Length: 96
Image (cartoon, rainbow, N blue to C red; front, top):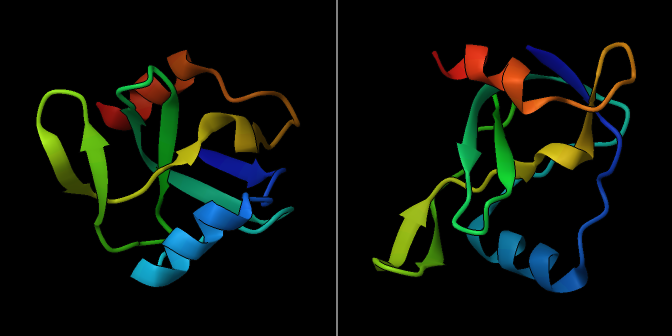
């Protein structure tokens, strides 16, 4: 599935964390291919993009403690090629 980034603004603390681990972020108005969709422990859906392969970073998991995973980007940062919000039902096809 192809999507367009509509929000590439990250809070300074997030950018500092990403810089520490060499994480690349998507750029506004650029098209990306969804590699996978992941559900966060917060219930939010994040996307992994084919064009951006990032190193694993440490995150706090409520049960497992610190785990290392590739960071995802919130589904709300993207739109379909038709300018519509990305729907989670469409992403189920990506992960299958």
